[in-house]
Image (cartoon, rainbow, N blue to C red; front, side):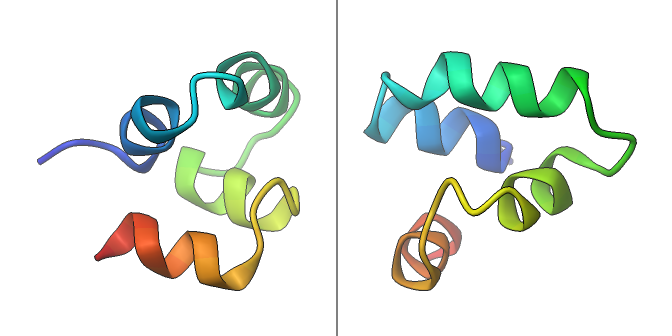
Length: 50
């Protein structure tokens, strides 16, 4: 199973550096950090999980 980070970067490569920055400054799991960062709106999060 692919991670949320991999799915998001595949769909939008521009998010790669933003996600990397978020993950290096967060102690949360990748998924939690991405959701809490507001990089994505609710619809985008649901699309990534589907």
